[in-house]
Length: 443
Image (cartoon, rainbow, N blue to C red; front, side):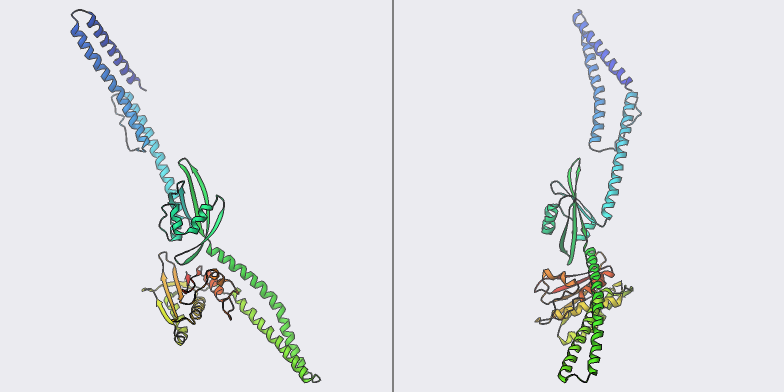
C-alpha cells in the first residue's frame, strides 16, 4: 500500500548517506572543501525533505483522528494524488469517515424515533442525572402538571414538597401514590422510577400517571355493586312486611269484640309498622337511583345556554333569599357533546348545593362560569362564599350515603360524579374552610 512512500523514504536515506559521505570525503581530501560544503547543504536539504515527507503523513493522520474525536465527518479527502500511497491513504480516510457518518446518522434517527415515542406517550416522564440535573421532560408531564420545565430535582420540591419527597424515597420497582392540586384540579399520581446505568453515568427516570379517573371509576363500581346487593336484600325483606302489615290492619278493623282502646292501640301499632315499612321502601327506592342512571344520549348543545336554562329555574329562589349571582361566559358560543337532561340534573344539584351553602352568610353570593382551557377541555365552575369544606371531607362528599346535611340523603354528589364519568369527564371540588367552595366539571 505504501510502496511508493517507502521508495521515497529509501531514496532520502540513500541521498543523506551519500551527502554525508561527500562531506567526509571533502573534509579529509585536500582541496575538496567546496565539495564538503556542497555535500553538507545537500545532506541538510535531504533531511529537511525527509522531515516534510514524514510530517505531511503525520499531519494528515492527526487531522483525521481529531475529526473523529470531535465528531466532524464533513471533511473529504481527494484520492487524485500523484503519490499512489497517499491516494490510497486518503481513500481509506474517506471510507472510515463515511462509516462514522452513517453510524451518527443512524444514531440520530434512533434518537429522533425514541424522542417521538417519549413525547407521544400519555404517561409523564422526567429524567435526572446523578447530580439531579434534568435531562428530559416530555410534553405529557408538562400538560399534567402545567409546568413547562424542571431545571433540576430540587425545583420539584419548590413546586410540590410531597411529590419531591415521594420521588426521593422511591426505590426501583416500587410505586407511590401522591395527591396534589394543580390548576384547581385534584390529581392522584402513580409515581414509579427506574435507574439507567449507561456509559456516561447513572440516570433516574420517573414516570407519573394520573389515575384519578380510574380510582373514581373503581370506587363507583364498588359502591354500585354494594347498593345492588343491599337493595335486593332490603326489598326482599321489607315487601312482605309491608304487605302483612296492611293485611293485619284491615283484619283488625273488622273485629268488633276487641276492647276499643286495645283495638285502637293495635291499629295504631300496625299503621306505624305499615308507615315505617313504606318509608323504608321509599328510602330503598331512592338509593336505587344510583344504579339506574341511563346511558347518555349525546347531542350538540351550547354550554352557556345549558347553564342559563338551569339558572332560570332558580331565579325566584335567588331573589327570595337575596343571593347575588355572578355569571361569566365565553364571548363565542361553546358547543359540547352531552346529554342535556343528565347534565341539567348535575347542574341543578350543584347550584342547589351552592344556595344551601350560602345560607346564613352576611353577603350570600354564587358565581358560575363556563370556559375552555388551553388543552380544549370545557370547564363548568359553580362557586359559593359559604363556610367551605374541610380538607378531610372533600373526597368523602362524593361517597354514596355520606352527607353533612341533617336532612340530606347523601346521593346527590355521588350521582353527579357518575353522570360526569359517563360523559368521560370529571367532577372535583376545591375548598378552604371559611373561603367557600368551587365545584369544577371538566368535559
